[in-house]
Image 1 (tube, rainbow over the protein chains, first blue to last red):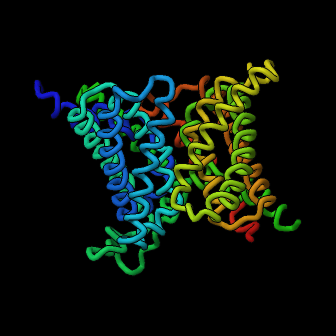
Image 2: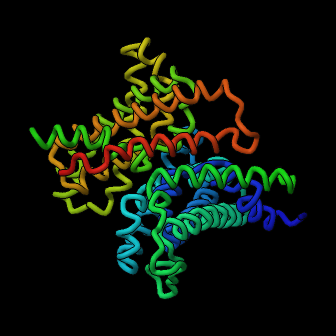
Image 3: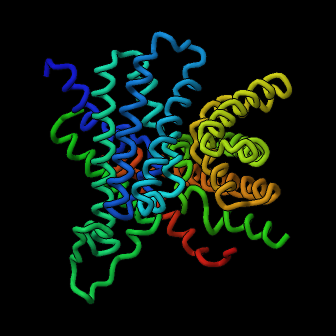
Length: 206
Length: 193
């Protein structure tokens, strides 16, 4: 644990997991986790934006005046989100359509601005890179957990709309639609949060 | 006229921005602890969203489209919103100190409320006219305000009950929001364009 770079990565995944510990970035978390594919796509987009913005914010930290740092961070983040938006639109149009307006809304995802403000604005470039990867991976794992539960119960499938799609239950299975509905998203996340509270307490990670 | 009224009802009840569309969840969870703060935040959001929708619509159709700069839409919109929030804050401090006392602390938080950017982007994406966009902004923010106030009422009562340890904090709030969202599903399909 004396390696600070490794600590930066693992902190974002466990101790300061964006979804289960910090409860940040809830809008995309709840909205797009109907299918595992969407959750993974959003997670990868956030990892890319978060890592790039952390690196740029950190390398410019000596030149950004204290008073206007928030608008500067937002412009940096918005630039990378625009790039990601164009990449998704060009290479995976189906995913882009499924994520909808939540792709541009990565700009106002509190995790990214939060990491810029709390970490990258003060720390050296390499550590900010590790922090970006760690928080991004932690966010993605949270999205995956939620979307696995919601897809299995809500649609009765695993990895639907990909080459590895599996129909989990027999042909007479009636999917529990509530899991795919907005109400189900709130309830499943609430229960997962309670579960992680118990697990973290048992393991005494706090 | 008919379309304006249906936009108003759809985005307040049927497609509520918080409970059905998941925009603005962070402030919904963060400032819904007390009825008083919920009212303040709600008012500030109605004010900023309506103004921001108006300004971003004008910028999109009169600056970005004629100049062929639509790819800068995201950067422009977020900067306009951030600037607008700052402007409103400065203006209120001078013009109406009482209102500023009420809204002041909530205003800076609104920049990162994704409902503001979502309304601005969706108004353009759904090709609403200027008047429709403004009504859309009013409806979406009134829906946000309503959800926030209902939630704060529930949470004030929740404070007086014994919640299991693991569920305390955000977990029970999310489950409550889920039940609230379930209730709003009753409006589904009542109105469409």
